[in-house]
Structures are given as structure tokens and as C-alpha cells.
Length: 143
Image 1: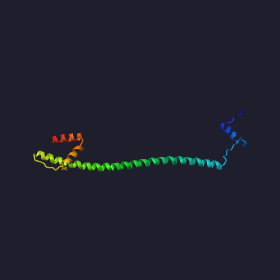
Image 2: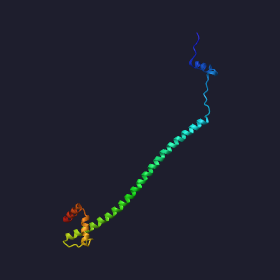
Image 3: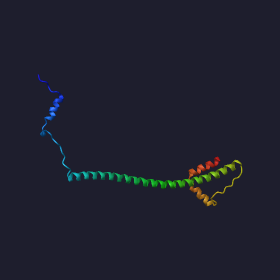
Image 4: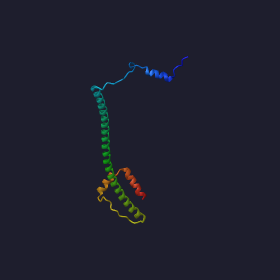
């Protein structure tokens, strides 16, 4: 009886029994100028797309910056107006405090009204809205 070859022997026989015709070598031809040009064009298109996207982002950033500058200008104006209004309120509070102290001591308080002529007082009265006038009068009566 003959012995059957082992797996390793079978593999060895198979590998060494190959002929040169059985071997296939795969080679790639060198890239042509056309292939290189196509690849370069694709890269250029990609870069153009990226550049266009960046340009859009830059335009949007510029628009936002302009809006921020505009808001800063408005905010500065509002801050100045608020400071002026705060000063006016402080002066009014000081006058009211003097008035209240004078009323509490039953002492006559003489505070000169800024408008000296009757026409100025009438003009001031017309400029005050009715709601503001009613609130002012009610506050004065409370004091």
C-alpha cells in the first residue's frame, strides 16, 4: 500500500508544479499626460469649491460685523440718553426730597420753578400727556 501525501507535501507539489505560463504579472502603465491633467483639473475644481464656500462665509461674517458696529452705535446713543435721563431723575428726586422734608417740618419750601412766565407754564402743561399729568398730580397729593 502506498502512502497518501500529507497536506504540506501536496502544497509543495502544487507550488513547484506551476509553470511560467501560469504566472500573471499585473503592471500598470505609467500615467499619461491626459490622466495627469484630469487629476489636476479635479483638484482645481475641489479648491474652487472650497474657495467659494470660504468667500460666502467671509461675506456673511462681514455682514454680521457691520450689524454689530451699527448696534454699538445705537447702544452708545442709548447709553448717553440714559445717563442724561438718570441725571434729570436725580435732580427731580433731590427737589422732591427737599419738598418732602419741608412738608414734614411744616416749613414753607420755596423752590423756583424753571419756567418764570405764564406762557412757558402753559406750553409745558400742553406738552405733558394727560396720563403723566394725572400720575404726577396724584403723587403730589400723596406727598
